[in-house]
Structure formats: structure tokens, C-alpha cells
Length: 439
Image 1: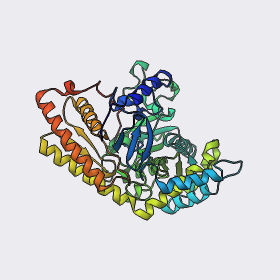
Image 2: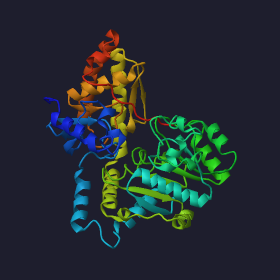
Image 3: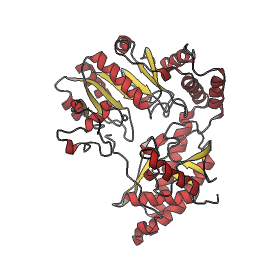
Image 4: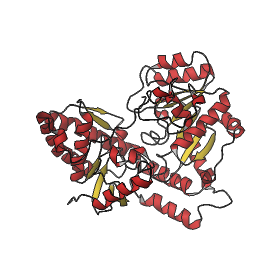
């Protein structure tokens, strides 16, 4: 492509930041997280694995693919057709849509341990619904958690310290301002694969909920997930698996199926509806009464587009064995990064799973190098960061083009590292850092 600096796009981003706090509703979509003063924050069209900005530049997206929400790729024809039909037939009425019942059966068939389904439209609110149900069922307020679980008060309460001046130190980047201080010590963190930490915070038997990402970038060791399950059973806590990102990528359904450990509640969202807002909370049948005992209700949890999109997405995943494709492309990228890093003498670390493959530069100025990588990839027509959320739209030719470009950019980076000129090569400020994950 003939890349031209996206002046219209950049101008809109500057205008947006004056009236929209942070510029975007999502921290991960802020231009400063990728490439300050250069990142094309807005698009006009997206199809497959390509995105076009306001200036007419079309990029291959080898980054987050809608922050992980578009597993099939952008504007998938089958999902879009189902949604268009739902819009034409009416997406909202005084009555309920039958598709929500159909989707519930699909989810329960995929997870025989579950017997109830509730819906929301985003991952963060779905996790909050799950926590409310779990607290109602256990009768205990404290939550032990591992991983990232959204922006709601129950989770950010973990960043409240005894002294307000120390707030935010536990999970840097997630500020708890505005969260009631009365929630202090209601959410207690433990790190992945460190079962001794969970044992310590549950020893007083006052934890009613254990919530965690089943896996992120580390595999469970020494029967970690089984031991978490055993602790939950022993103390009478409800075990919640956050499958917002992991669900439906490794297998059709929750990734917990691979590890043969069933939770009491599992939460799905961005992975099930290919870019259309939808979330599902599934739970054991004995949690039905707890779900009804607390007021949990919202108008737009009943609209039709979400369930229709989820049904079409899951059907296409099943028919095309999408998880197998994601793993194949992810492994190709993984091996490509490692081979090219060895070729150019660049120190990196690659982590999986392949479907959410990521790498990091092993240098003190890693953030500066990562910014340079994003900048040079962008100039060559590729949206790139330190991770690739693989989609069904990513084909062999896309990965080939991507790795050929990485080869070219790694050569530039190697020379910049050797000559200590990384900052000199940047056309703008260094990218901002995100929040830390307790995984």
C-alpha cells in the first residue's frame, strides 16, 4: 500500500479528546496505547482482516481484532446476514425473542455441568452479574480473584489501600477513585499457579467467591485448577471462571473443558458474537434460586441482535472447526517471531496460547522498542502491537505478509538497538503503558 499519514483521522482524535474523556470508551483503543500522534484511531470500513481509516489507508490488522471480539473476522457475511434479518424483523419489542431460549440450549449442550443461563451484553457487566449471584448463593461477601475482570466496583475494590495515598499500587494502571472505601478488603488477589496464596486468603473461611481466568499466558501447573476447585468446595465458595476472552478460541465452548475442571459459573462475552454486544452467564442448576433472589435486570439484555449474532457465530465456528484454524495460524506466527528474532539477534520472549499469541522485547527500553515496532509496521500497512489475537479471517497469505514485514522491521530495530538510536527513530512520543495483570 502507498501509506500516507492519516491527517483526517489524527485530527478527529485530537478533537475527540477535548469532549470524550480519554478519547475512547475503552482504554485499549486509545491511540496513545499504540502510537501517540500517529495511530489511526478511526475507521470507515472493515472486512475480513482489513481496516480502512478516514484517509483511505487500508491496513492488515495483525493486532487485537476488535480487542478480541471478532474471532471470525470483521463483518463476517454469515453473522451479518443473520443480524440484518433480525433488524428487519424487529430487534426489540415488549415480548421476548425466542433466540435467547435457543442460545441457552446451545450453551447448556456444550457445558453439561450447567443448568441455567442469564444474559448481559458486555464482559464486565456479566462478571458483575456472576459475582452478585455467587455472593447470594454463598452468603459470604469476600471475593478471591486471579486475573483481569473489568472496571466494576467489586473488582477495583482490590486496589483500595489502608491509606488512600497508596491506592492503585496493587494493580498499576487501574485507579479505584470513586470506588466506595467501605469495599476495602472485599476483593483479595492471588497469582496464577500460586495455590499457597489462595490457601492463605481463604483460611478464615470468609471468602464466598473465587473468580479467575482459566488460563491466560501460563499453563496450569501441579494440578492448579483442580486445587482451586477443591478449595472452593472445602470452604463453600462459588467458583467462577472468566471465559470472556478465552472462551471458544481453544475449543467450542469454555477452555475449562480442555482441563476437565468445571466451575459453578462460567462467563462468556466477546468471543461468542463476532463484534456484536452479547454476554452469557451459565451456572449450575442449583444456582437458579440464588439468581432469582437478587434484583438483576436490564432492558437491553433482552434485545434480539445479541443472541442472533451468538447463534450464527457459534454455528460457523462448529461448521468450520475455527479453533483448529486459530491454533494453526497462531503457531505459525509464534514460530515466525522466534525465527526472525534469532535471525536478527533480538532478544524476545513469546507466550501463548497460540490463539492469543504475544511477544515482548527483553530490553530495559522495551516500551520504546515496541513503539518503534508499531510505527514501522504501520508505515508498511499493518496494524501491529505486541500481540496477535488470531481470527478465522487470518489466512496463510496474511501471516506470510506479516512475517515478511516483521523481518524487515526487525532489521531496523536491531540496528537501532546496536546504535542506541531507538528514540531518534520515533516520529512521536513513546506509547503509554497499560495496566498490569495479576496472572
